[in-house]
Length: 314
Image (cartoon, rainbow, N blue to C red; front, side, top):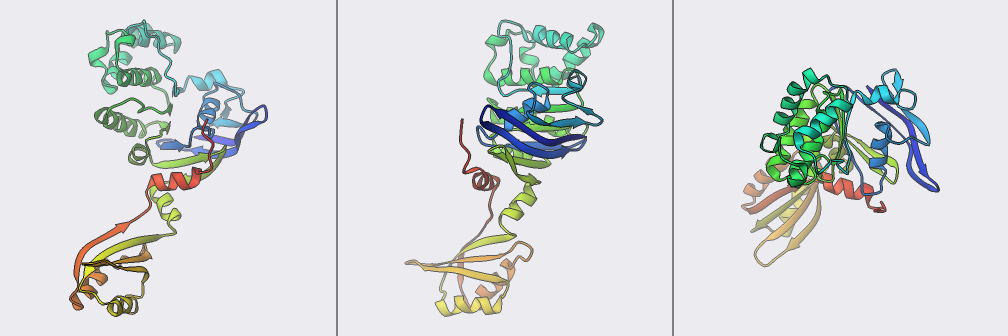
């Protein structure tokens, strides 16, 4: 388990991180979201021991990142936002270099190398010079370097940057697989990818945590459990539309807009009580023709914008 406890980081008068706290459990993939300058990367750097906090601490079981930095770093695989690669080295040689730094015995390197090359789909470039690799391959090389020592914890800052859609799916599957046996904390600006990959989402804005939960719970909380329904119908009188509320009391009619050939009805209802079948039956009884019925819910991008709209990009 990882416990982030009242963590703060100041740069002179700038409060980059403001007394944030959260816990991460084993076997969990967590998405860490925030606009540029929100304190996201600063938090990840503190968690990996790369920089020191102004106050607070990060606990890994009984150890903490300030007193046990070197010991904890042995258990962490870290892919920073700016992927640190040596462009003149071959992929094989670079991963051997990282392996040596990590203290992996030479006798174990071959198996470790083959494992990460396979998992990160690097077979085609394993003996190529890094500088001659595409951006997508470079990102996967950085991920392989973070994984080569088989860490218990993976902290990944923008791991899918520069990957094409097929590569993103491969890395998503890999991260979800790794999340069954490790703690994985990842940031990304690709919100759909976060939603498809993680078990839990933490959103940070201006140095403070503004949301924490599963994507489903965040969507439910943000909408107050409400769903909007837009219906286009023809052959409907205004009186019959208004009477629908009396017949189906679980709905609220927000607006009725008449067009040349149809009427649009905007309805709101509770997420826990879906009235669409009742609406359909009512329409049939009134001999309406339903042209379209579309339920709209907030998506993760809407929530992110609402919670971070005051963020100041850096």
